[in-house]
Image (cartoon, rainbow, N blue to C red; front, side):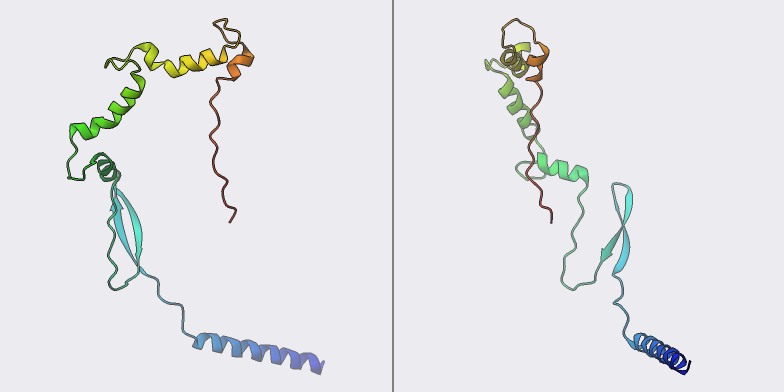
Length: 147
């Protein structure tokens, strides 16, 4: 019984010593300053550590990013040519005879080619087995790292 009492006293003393030692240690560093910011009408908190000489990044809105993509020559203005150029390229790919007009067969050329390629018996209609060939090919994604 005396051994149990001594063990209890030693455990209590070790616990009190540990608590006193932990209280004398410096605490964790203070959290960075939190300030509110807005983007597109929404508020969110920014954690900004106060580091000297670090420039603050400006958040671009969705429209500013879209404008930047359209302004090809980076002159701060979007011209009609800059805005229409991607559409002209897409139209030129579809305009097979390059007459500046898009006929239905030109617009549907990819689908027509797909149909003709799947119609193996040249019957003008697709069986269930032939129709399966027209299904879009699955996109192959590169293997992801299991880090």
